[in-house]
Figure 1 (cartoon, helix red, strand yellow):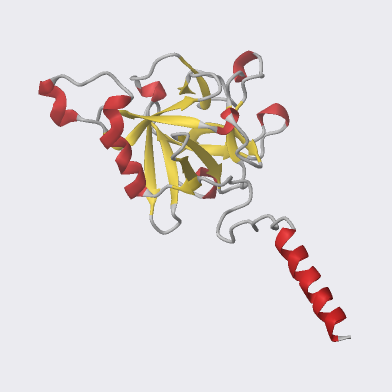
Figure 2 (cartoon, rainbow, N blue to C red; figure 1 turned 120 degrees about the vertical axis):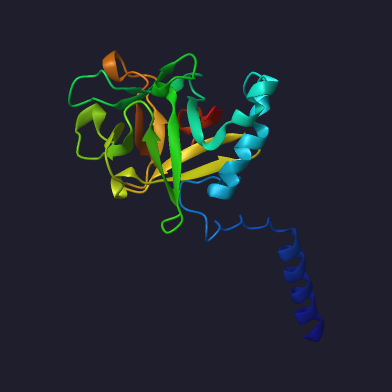
Length: 219
């Protein structure tokens, strides 16, 4: 009887060793929809963009070195279409100030945004330099315009708060709205005036539609 028990124990031990390991459980501190390798970015992390600016823009003239870009002044480039987000200040209501990734270059106020960090909420507010308004998520819009990003607010509340994520391996960023918990996407397939519009509508960071490159601007 003893030998039988020992044989069964040995068989169980071998089976346990040969069985495939269970998949690792999701990290308890990683929000849903955020893939491995993506981390939340605070003000100190974002400041490092300025240190790597030379790799992403034309070199500054020596006499302009003192005017190097402030890290919080940024242009937002969509990875999906390689274009920069612009504030459509000339659009008629109700889309005045909508954000669209439609510019082939950056450098003017339409493509310029101030990323303002709030230590209390650990979030950013995005202020358009085109009209000095904060970017809001239009949750109450309907149809294809629902959750579109629009620079229209004079103050910051839940509609204007975003969490910024960064993937070091991809060197790309993603924005998550705190209003609805969804990630900002560039609507490449839209037509008409909302083509390339930015909308907070994705539950996950799935690819280039939710990914952006941030470029420092001259102060």
